[in-house]
Length: 314
Image 1 (tube, rainbow, N blue to C red):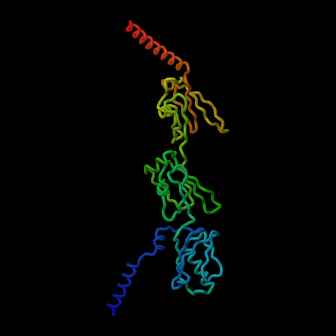
Image 2: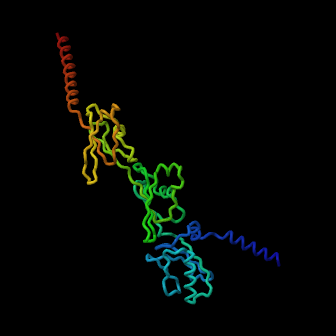
Image 3: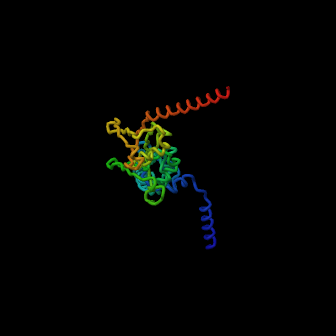
């Protein structure tokens, strides 16, 4: 008799181990215990009552409807373990079952969006369907774009209207270096990750490569750096330059820069800000002088050649 019992137990154990895992079990295996929200997909299992067991989508107003129950059940904002007791009480109150056993799990979260926007390669919105870190979210967005600024802004929206949203700033270099692992935040949904684009400084006038240059850190840009990025001055540049800067009322003010003094290290370098325009004027006197010199040289070469031809003809 004992041998028969051991044999039955072994068979049951083997059956349990060999039973394939259902898709719903795979989906909910790694999901954290989080409150249910609108449009989430719930897996409700009532033991010994297959007619009551099913997957149910939470309505947009936060309710579910179970068969044989006359009223809908409010579920939004409650944990799965709380829903289990709620369904048990409802089944008992309706005299459908005497001592029901109920389990509730979340098969799909649709109420926990994470938005990744700004200077990333592929901005997107996805659901926090499991433990998700800040680096995971940036990875889903394809990583940072080339024009990303020096920090990331993370806004966490409180699910309780009585609590304000929270804003956190994280330096990208500290996050990517791994020197401060606590910056790789664990996200749970309702977060917006915004990567601002780097500010630009426009360099124009008598430089070799005019254009707009990214200013990744607003506290580090200087006139000399901008000149280096624009490959230096031309031979017709003046000794002075000008910065045209946006004021608070969105008008531009002019800031004179002693360019010659900076290059000779007689004056400190000047900081530039995002959206500044650095203009290097043309030295018209020098251009006229060079043009006149070129004409004289050309005239001299032409006259010499003419004289040589004339003397050769004789």
